[in-house]
Length: 129
Image (cartoon, rainbow, N blue to C red; front, side, top):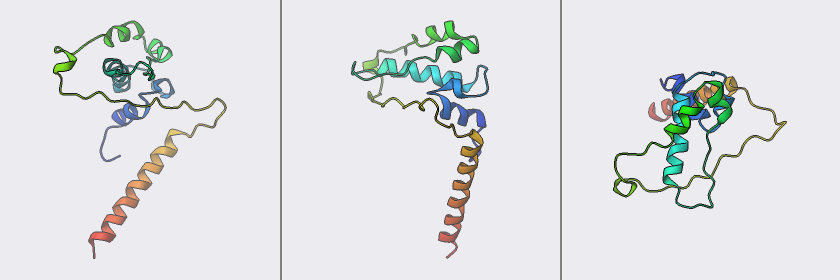
């Protein structure tokens, strides 16, 4: 999609639920998943808001559970108050209910491709006048 490597698309798509990904090896998905949890922990400003947790099953499957627990402890060299970042609040994603039919990933890929084609056709129609 738009020339973006599949591994990057996969990391973006599955970083909240990495165990759903079929590829069970250390990848960009692993790095994004752990970084997402670490950043949410670092930026937590409201203790009443849920923050994502490490996916223990997935991280054990690829053999980096112990390391991942250390990775989330890393902090920037500077104090958080010195960083040009603003805290943000993201509502946790809702997991798919048990028993619900899961849409195969190839369907999403085809839908994305069709959306891209539709956007190109609309642009051609708009600019060809």
